[in-house]
Image (cartoon, rainbow, N blue to C red; front, side, top):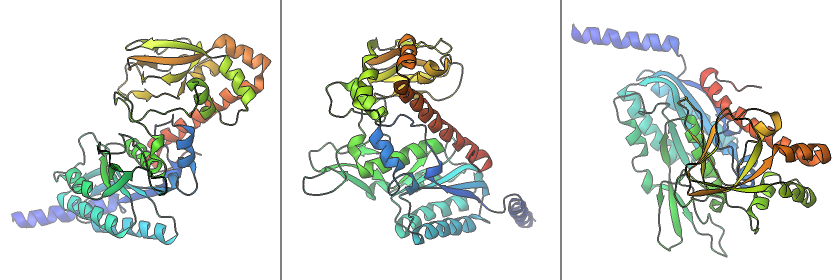
Length: 391
């Protein structure tokens, strides 16, 4: 009787899930349509990510849904293989594949074991550099089987090596981002680090940041640097220029001619802050924008459970408040021992608008650029919920 009851329950589960979620794959899309929260990358990094050949189109995300169990996991695995096969046959092979389980309601043990096997199959049979698994939950996959451990087990022995660039050999080089690379070899050999070929991420945003870092590291790891306190994944270094503030400005507005750059740079006033000091508080009147030249800052939403956001050298902050007279949206605090910021006051901004509006236009365009990135990043949540990106 118990066996019969168990069989009936299993068949009922299979029928119910098949009716509710006829397809365990909700959809798939290229990374071109997605953005991470890493909005303040440098110009060189952005050029790599926006590149037609080695940019975000080399990220491929597949969204899963519903309960994945013994009755539909085979179809899910076959469909994932089919999608990747189509990409490769079209010459559009991805370097990073993301399997996003955010909308998965649960996994039974047999399905979890099949997914672990799928990981091995994809890495062995497709030219995928990195395979990322998004659990969508702080405590990992929603199953009793230790899938998180299984999908990363053995990755360290099969990974991408980052080595120093030799004068006569074209190879990946120099250093790495702590966010994207799991280990560091501190010996003086040519080997610098390894990127494990699989990784488990809690959120889609975490996976996208990692994937973007990998694409940058594969092209030019020297763009990504770790800071001295290792508080943040990387610190953007300015180009060769004695004046870091001007160099960062050149990165932010590369289209500006030298004369206009002189005008902008002359309006900036240096300020020094120390660890724990508040640059401004949420709700304050916006009186300036600031260019971060040295040090580490953090942006916090008061009375919210949102994760804090790091602010790195080379970032411009407060530009929206200055241009649109919006009160400060977050509290900004200094984390490093000291921080050097260059400030453009509201009075100087008004003078710039009146006397040289074409130069002020560069700041306007920077505001639009930052807002566009944040809208695209916010759309990732919409993708998770309704499967489409806003037009």
